[in-house]
Image 1 (cartoon, one colour):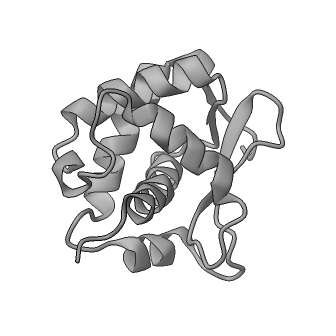
Image 2 (spheres, helix red, strand yellow):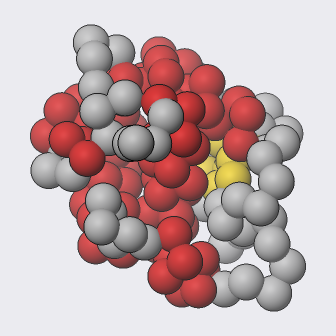
Image 3 (cartoon, rainbow, N blue to C red):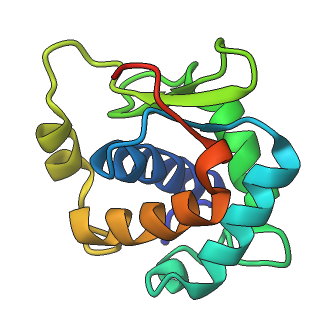
Length: 138
């Protein structure tokens, strides 16, 4: 049985956080319109999107947005999103002692690996543009 729609969303939300961190960004805009527009465009061109059929549809960014809102409450997630900094989503690694490289290795599977998460994150960040990508930990 294939993973549920919610399990697919969780996997992509974590993978996007890892990809954003791998690409060196500390935060992305929490403006829902800006976020979903950038994600929708990126998702349509990502070559691994077909591995997550539960997310495909006219507005995948709205579905991922809901996943970001829930990600901080998930147990045993390798990456999550924090919205405590007004106007920003901040990706982070919630498991103490786990490096980014270890989290990516654990999260990688036949659907998407490190290079795939990077190839989702890079155009997403580019689409958000300079004002949509923040640096808090630099």
